Amino acid sequence: MATPLTGSQLLAALRAEGLVVHEVRDWRRHNRNTKGPWGPMHGVVVHHTATEGTDASVDVCYDGRPDLPGPLCHGVIDKAGEVHLVGNGRANHAGLGDRNVLQAVIDEEELPKDELADTDGNRHFYGFECINLGDGQDPWPEAQLLAVERASAAICRAHGWGERSVIGHLEWQPGKIDPRGFTMDALRARIAARLSHPPEGPASPDAQGRPDGTGDGTGPPADSAGGGAGAGGGAGGDDARNPPVPPMPQHPPYEPFPGAEFFRSGARSPVLAAMAQRLIAEGCDHYRHGPAPEWNEAHRKSYASWQRKLGFHGKDADGVPGRVTWDRLHVPNTRAAGDA
Image (cartoon, rainbow, N blue to C red; front, side):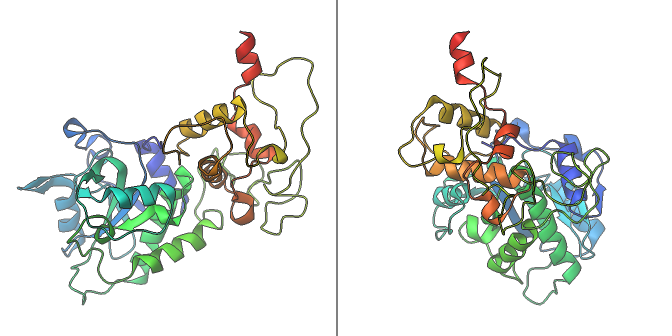
């Protein structure tokens, strides 16, 4: 279950992706949280405003309309490709949608046809309104499309999601047509390509190039003692299947890496349940029925989200733990807990 990003986290993620971001009025405390729950988060919904003009569009998304109070999204993306943050928390943007679509987003699978309006989307989705009339004639400048791509990728990167966590309003709620003027499949392809590389924009002062703020900023970390994290594998990357850590005389606070061969079909251990609890705490949750002590597909999908969150891609984010990502997950030592 992904915990919603704080205002500061959202701002940092967007700027790290190379976006120009404007903070509108009291956006950090502007939300509809008193009207319903906010989170856990599962994805991003893209809309068009059906308005024109930056100032007027931003104002209506912040203030709302007589029949629908604001905020009407979290960020407004203008024609120049700049983002205007108008809300932080629950917003009136997604409305009721199809529970089967939500489950497909959680599982990062192909979307079914949206036929139901039985699930609260305002609780589970970030929303970006893009300034466009939505009449099929109003153009979409490349700068604006690039900003939609970057903003969506920024949130996916922050939560360890893939491109299938981004949907259009027309894919969520029956009868909606937005965004009109480009296809969501094309946008998701762009997001996938972007997520296969580190963010282009400048990192925050305490994070020079690596997701955890370490290293020299020359590229993503390698999930091994040495070598790169490229898709080619070799000695580096999360596909480097290191041997188990030798036994230790005393129980460390965290589970030592048990070796990649530990994570196989039929494996059963309290270590897997402890791992799942940590993945859930990190917002990398693809569990339908709660974490189990048996290795299964939900474990693999959740761990793949953790790998992506740390900056790994392709074969290095296949969901099979490697030593570097395991050590950074800090799975509590189940034997130490049993001795307490």
